[in-house]
Amino acid sequence: MLCGAVFASLNKESYFCSMKFPIIAYGDSVLRKKAVDIPKDYPELDVLIANMFETMYGAHGVGLAAPQIGLSIRLFVIDATSFAEDEPALKDFKKVFINAQIIEETGEKWVFNEGCLSIPEIREDISRQDTVKISYYDEKWNHHEEIFNGLAARVIQHEYDHIEGKLFTDKLSPLRKTMLKNRLDSISKGLVKVEYKMKFPSVKKGRR
Ligand SMILES: [Zn+2]
Image 1 (cartoon, rainbow, N blue to C red):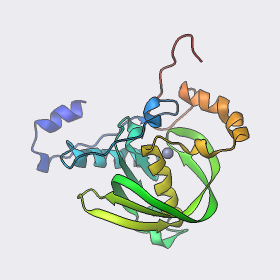
Image 2 (image 1 turned 45 degrees about the vertical axis):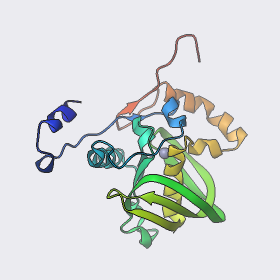
Image 3 (image 1 turned 180 degrees about the vertical axis):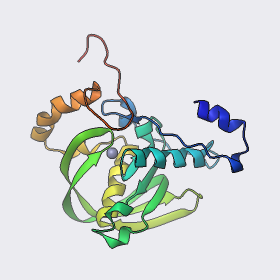
């Protein structure tokens, strides 16, 4: 938190403090909370957003939600421009979603192989509807009500689940969940090799 202290003592306009947060691993209760809206005067929101992007890029992710850095607030960031080769519409898809509410999900269900920075080394085929209508504010507090489909909708749905306290593994069949249980337990215990900084839930004595 040296960063914050230094930041406070300097002129905000002339100083940019860049830092990466540790990413909260599967098993931490913050990933299971329904996150709350934030007010327009939320402190240092611009710095938080910049650091979330920094954290996401550092882990080679395309999306990151605030609960994944331990903040149970309705904020997520997405940069899906790396998908532009498959879906040209995503060429400029770098967005911030504040206080988002999905209004409706429509269209055919389709399967996509999803991963999550909080659940390293596990990728699973997940079925979701194609189209999403969502209300949100951007980083300048402009309100949007927009419709997304395909991969854009997919990334939004995944990140939106995080602010609802849900994870993609919730959508797996009971059999698949059972098969993954040991690997998920290992992640919670920190028994996983990850290239980026993570925070693992502490293992309570006498409990498994
Ligand atoms: Zn995720």
